[in-house]
Image 1 (cartoon, protein in one colour):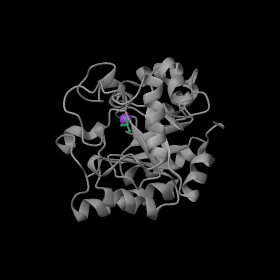
Image 2 (tube, rainbow, N blue to C red):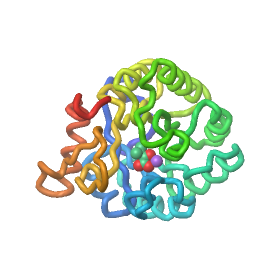
Image 3 (spheres, protein in one colour):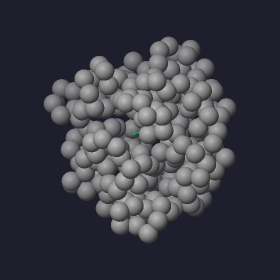
Image 4 (cartoon, rainbow, N blue to C red):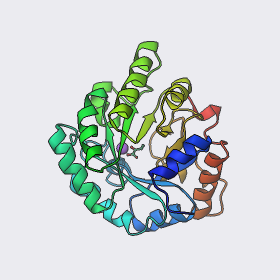
Length: 263
Ligand code: KIV
Ligand code: NA
């Protein structure tokens, strides 16, 4: 695989081609995912749940994420490395700039931040300083207590319109990528069609430009309730590298997600 950059993702979007993304937290799995052809690796704050055993992402610190980013960065191969800003990094523009700077020093190439249209200023300032941003909308796990649980967002027309408008505002502010989590497939399609920037989905239906899953879910070691949008690719694979390849190929062929994985 040629080195994946933002331009690669933009070219995929223009060509109507999908791309695959997967979380990674350490060097060995990062290398395995990169060798499977997965275009984007995410050091997600989901590490608070799948690595640390918390029941939300809120306890994860900037230092935790930087540590895992350094581990993944050494083995990311040709994949693009996206990294999450942790809970409250979006508290002020100054804090966003500072924390994103730390992530970039640790090896991030694209910084993901959860929030809504009010992040426009922070995103504009980051972009001006050469830090590309992915804005995470829809179900934002860092606000789980406000949302009242991990629930599909945008089922009603009003909230759906708000999410679409926020995506537009943040793309206009300079966001290079939008990520939509747990929204109806119709909204996933609408946002993808409305924007020129690549849109990555998780539980956002089959029509987004890219797809992302948490590595543990791809390998069938999800604990607790298995979300509808998850698929265990190891179940039909020979080994873990083969599971990652199967996930990648299913996304590229638009075989995943299927209807049963969508809302
Ligand atoms: O932290 C994470 O793994 C994420 C993905 C689920 C998109 O943000
Ligand atoms: Na995250």
